[in-house]
Length: 354
Image (cartoon, rainbow, N blue to C red; front, side, top):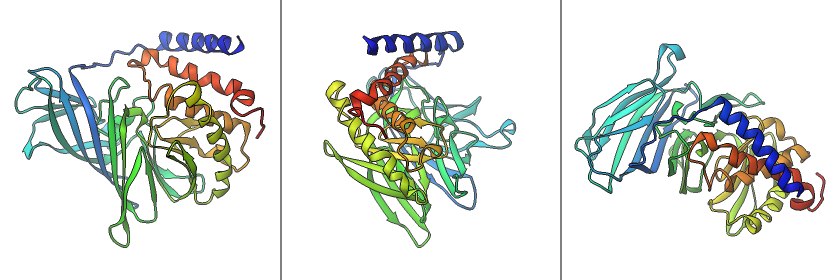
């Protein structure tokens, strides 16, 4: 009964908050389905400008569609020149016409679509992100690159359908200075030193998620491989100056993973990584590589951090695997994920204190 009352309380609070302050009027197009994104990014220590090539595989469910809408913040004076500039858009070697205004990228297709046909588009662009991708120092003053896409900030650095209703699988292929380690969604496919100063890192996630859950962390990391859960790697990524932070994550993560599959369902992602970041306060449930604010990582395994770990892991089921199609309903997954830390001491952690 106590569990159920807390759920009702959280739900009512969140309903009031969302219904009274926000109305989701995003122009959904259910006749178009983005199947997969490949984000190729070049990062540098010499500049905050990023260079991107995004390949999009799209399914047109209906015939007669002659244009595609994407979200991408355009470089402009109001942002002091920050934002993205599109260089070209290609389809099978053919250059496509497009317009880019009001942070919307409209792509004209060379011919109207056939029903249930697929196409692949390649967008080349560059710019300094005004938001979304944070390029700057960690708490130790070390340069880093970390994103925060919540709620609709992926558009500041990635051309996407930037709304939770659209879910797609993804790849990040990142070329960066060789002294960095790179973490992202899914499985590590390749890590290659291209030369003495440059490294390529390729991550791929086959499970479809919304754009707010795409994740990229580039820093000088220390990485611990904690163990395995149902054949999937449990990992901790903290700054190399915060190795004591390994202690913060291992036990709460293993304990929570022992609870959720039994009571909710299978864990669907390819790995479980806990990642220290300067880009969020508290936590962010990015799929398979969860972000935790650097202020939480201190090697003390605090009760606060334990509860954040439980909450963000709960989101891997509520919000990530099962996703609301409208921002108006976002309180649902937040409500489920909020109540679980309340009962964690006895139910999830066997009454242990950290």
